Amino acid sequence: MGSSLILIFAVFSLFSPSYQKNVKIEKVSTCNGKQGQLTDISGLETVEGTSGWGLTGTAELLRNLPNNVTVSGSIYKHLIRWIPVVPVPKMSACDFLRKKLFVYEILRKNSNLPSKCPVKKSTFKFRDVKLDPTEIPWYIPSGCTRIDFKLNLGKKTIACYRVIMNVVNGEVPKKFKCV
Image 1: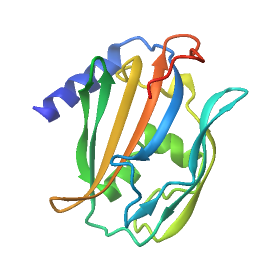
Image 2: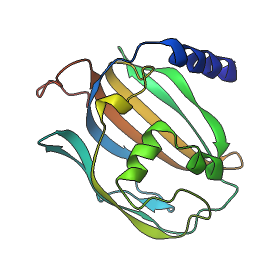
Image 3: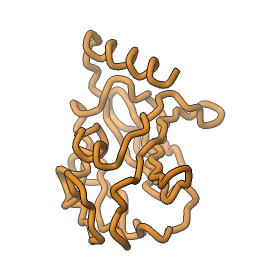
């Protein structure tokens, strides 16, 4: 079912008009709000700059990432509660790094994040990461949107990261907040 849904989104993305959206990144955190044994992302913060909202700071990988880690997740839209709308397909972390997927590629271009395995213990520096409206895929829903990424070792989740953002057509309202 998940693979079929992704295939449908991929086919429609080839033929759909491009919609320019703006994004205000409101929060980047671990899914449970606590730093784990794998990473420390407490040095990341969202900032408002002259050309929009961005992400800056540091994140630490506290130990080498095992090569057999998988990545999965979901994109959610907030209505009355968070509703999953697009699954992030499960794949090996090494494949994830090579595929240049939407959010990771934007982060990588503005940091020293790796583009291939092995991923060694390191401090990653993010320099005013901004989401260009032309880089936002059409399937990212407008309004309050949440993206959860999980790192799994076998069936165990070893890390989970959450990005909450306000996605709008037009100007991002300064007073409205998702969180």
